[in-house]
Amino acid sequence: TESKYRHGGNLKTRSTDLESAVTGSSLTTVLPASTTVMKSIILSSESRKELAKQAKVTKEERRAQIDGRHRYLISRLADGIDLSEQQVEETIISDDKFQLIEEFFAPSGHKKLLFFYQDVLQQKLNASSRSDGSTNSLPQKKLFITMGSTEDFTGTCAFFLRTSDEVITTSNVSQEVNFGMFDCTNGNILQGLEFFLSQIMIPALKSQQNWGAVKEGLKNRQIQEFLYSVDKFVGTLSSSRQNIEDKIQLTKVDIDIYVRNLQNPTDYITAG
Image (cartoon, rainbow, N blue to C red; front, side):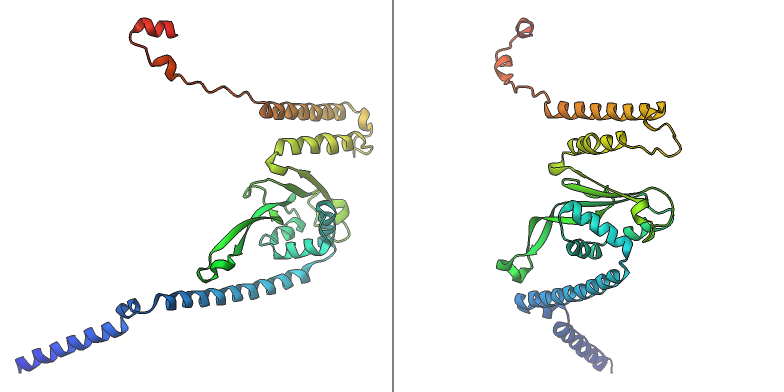
């Protein structure tokens, strides 16, 4: 009986080993590599189709939300960046930060809404190596919503600023929201800011007739001091930019010829 039990146990072990050999990981090792790659490509293709389907649904939901407030933003951006309103609309409803627009419109919402228009790296499928899913990164102009602190700024910034904490509606958007732009092509932020202040903001301020509760307008001493401080800031900005552009470059010197023959303290003093 004991002998039969052991024999049965051995048969069970062999059967389990055989099953493991057939259904376990050892089977994977004998599959052709192309089969695994093809399965991965098929799954990747299905995933992309599903993501594209979800993105299309999201875009149409956002398109249905667009009203006069969005149209105001779209028209300002189209005029400033030289894109069609349709292009701007498609860009906005496809942006993963679309919700920032709604938060900008809300009561006591964000005080600013920023857009960058600049070269970004776009991932494109490499047709010559489609089977392994490799991609090429190509620079391409793109308009996108930004917080202003997560991406490098190398192009044009278009911004909207709120003037109060009131909810932004279709009837007050043109009064409550100001639009502006400044160009920092090639990342030259100082030059872009200097141009924006000196050529746009300061002339606009100096021609401003209505200063709210200040009845004297430009004749008011505080207004004059404010304009003087802005002028002074722009002057400092200009000086800083010029100092950076005309920075001193020290000539590289090969000191080896000076230290090669130093043998004693007198040589060091002479070299000094």
